[in-house]
Image (tube, rainbow, N blue to C red; front, side, top):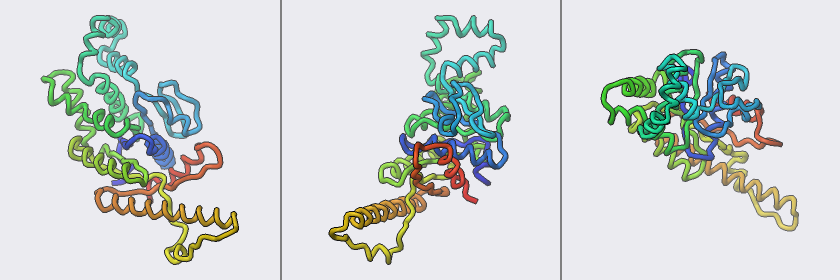
Length: 299
C-alpha cells in the first residue's frame, strides 16, 4: 500500500537529523494529494509552523499551510482534554483534577503524562477529522519509550479504564494498514548505526511496521569515476586550487552517501529514500520544504 494511505505516520530518528523537516515535507506532499493533514509535535518547542512559513499556533490546533494543521501536544493540556472528555462536565473535571490531593496522586502513576499525550495524538487519528496524522516523535530513545507506553502499561496494570485505553492505543499503533514508522537519518556512520538499531526496536519491541527510511542530506555524485581519475592538484592558481578542493570534497561526500545508502538498503527491509542536501541562499524556508516534498513520496 502507498505510504500516504495510512492514517498515522510516525517520524522517528536521533536528534539533529531533520525529523521535523521531514514531517513538514510529508505533510505538504500529502496535502498536495488532497489529504487533510495534522502534524503533532510532542512536548517541545514549536517548529512545524515556522518551517512552513506560518506563525506559531500557540500550542493549539492551527492552520499552518493549505490542507495542513499543526499542534504541540503537552502533558498538562492533554490531561485537561482527557479529563474533560471522560468526565464530560467542566465542574466535575475541576472537582477531580484541580483537587490538590488528586493532582499529587496522579503524579505517581507511571507514564501517565506520556499516555495522555499519546492518547491525544491517537484520538485525532481515530476521530477521522483528518485523513492523515503525522507524529513528529521524540528523539530515538525517548521516542521508543513514548510509543511503548501502551504495552508497558498493559504489562503492569489490572483490568480497568486505563487498561482499556492502553489496549486500543497499542492496537492502533500495531495495525500495519493504519500506522507506519518512518526513520530519518543522515549519511554518517553513527546515525546509520542508530537507525538500524531503531528499526529493530520498532519491529521487535514495539511490534510496529516500518514505512520509509529517509536518508536526509544525501549528496549525489557530480563526477563520473573516469572524471575523478583526472583530478590533479593545480599549482599556483588560487581559483583552480579552490575548485580542486571543492570537487574533491564533494566526491568524498558523495561516496560516503552512496556507501551508507547501500548499507541501509542491504540491512533494512524497508524502502530507502534519499533526500537531497539543499543549499538555500538564505534561511531554510518553505521553498526548501516544498523541494523535499517532491522527494519524500517517490512516484
